[in-house]
Image 1 (cartoon, rainbow, N blue to C red):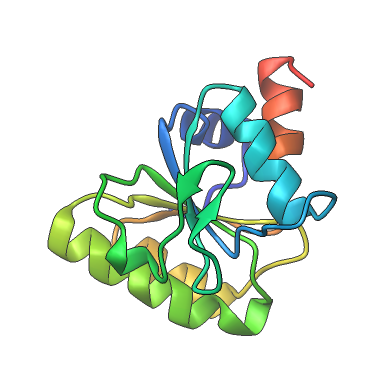
Image 2: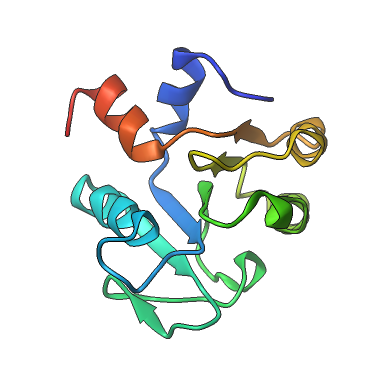
Length: 142
């Protein structure tokens, strides 16, 4: 399902484990600071970055499919042109493992066709929204 309304966004914020594709090692970048915020608010963040061994004190994985733990939501910090490949990996994981049932494309990131295809496979998809902003707005935390 393509998620656009507050009720759906809030439901996705009930996730416990969030894999962050494109998680950055560089403080000051949104792809680092947003996952750090999520950690501070009780989420288990799993970095997905093939160029790092560890980010935010957590083991980093090369790809979504490599993550050993159960994933509730995949948060994406990669350019829109990479979204089809990323959502294909989420779809494969969801089909084979039954987890990764939601994908959140950060502010400025969208791909309507890939999002529609993922939604058709039962994955909830948010596009072009910042999870930190929505968390603060909907859960009353900054």
